[in-house]
Image 1 (cartoon, rainbow, N blue to C red):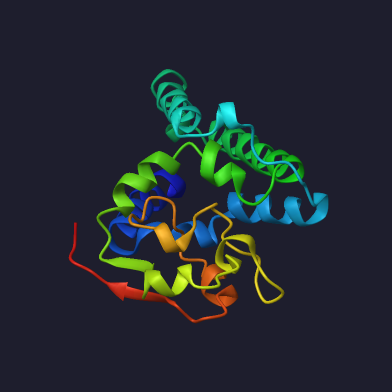
Image 2: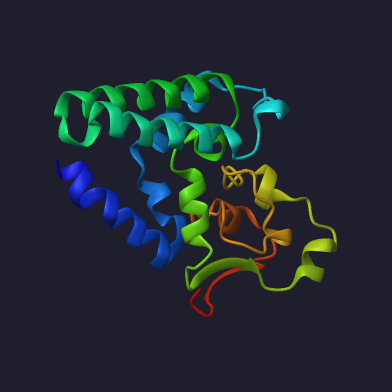
Length: 187
């Protein structure tokens, strides 16, 4: 019950106030990262499955399952849901690069993205023209110092908080220190 009564509403408030910061601490994202470190996958998530349509379908299925099966009232059903999501996160990490599970499969990723756009916190390039001059795109690809953006975002063109999870891998790998966390107007 703690999962559905405290955690679920809590993460929604987190998204509104600080964007997808929860994603940095999410156990499913962590499992996806660990599996990717073990498997060292070279493949990108299939292009035909990219976008939010699959995650939205999974969210609708989760909502339906709650209505029909009463997941939030059953610790056993909640445990099976967690096992299913954990398995999906691990399998995705073994076969596809970075946080493909979080970007394309997580059933709440679309919901997170919508709420995160209201957040008064953003991570952006300070000077876009600086990114265009001799940039090796370490913020996206990674460098010796950091892994690059796990959510497949290119900070130079970032205009919305939809997928940025504030992991700061881009900040660590930017050789020009051109990325900054800043406040903006709410909503």
